[in-house]
Image (cartoon, rainbow, N blue to C red):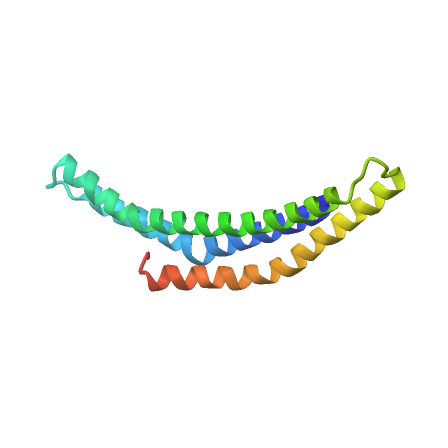
Amino acid sequence: MEAVKTRVEKELIKATNDLDQSLLRKMQGDLYRCAAACCDNTTTSIEDKQNCIQNCSSPLQRAETFIDGQLTNYAERVQRCFMDCQDKARDKVTPNSSEADMKVLKMGMETCAAMCADKLLPILSDFTKKMKETIKKENYE
């Protein structure tokens, strides 16, 4: 089960890095350049400067919030599948279950979890692509 969880975590990290490198870093650079321009303007009030900086950070904050929510939803989907596997195994446990029975149930649970990963990991790349498209379409940038 741990190997399957590690596999899923690695793919989530890969997707997060992809989103960071392909979208968020540019947005971060834009934020800092924009904020620097706000600070370079010596004719504005402190409040106007702060509002300017806040406006600069808004696209990145919205994009990060969107991505965090989407990745959380995906992780919860994987977790629900894993929990279903655990529930199915627990439902088969009886007071008379032997140690050998428990090993078989554990193997069945691990096979089920691997099937969850096999089913849901291929979706992650499409999911990441849709997030990128949404961020570009919604003009977060």
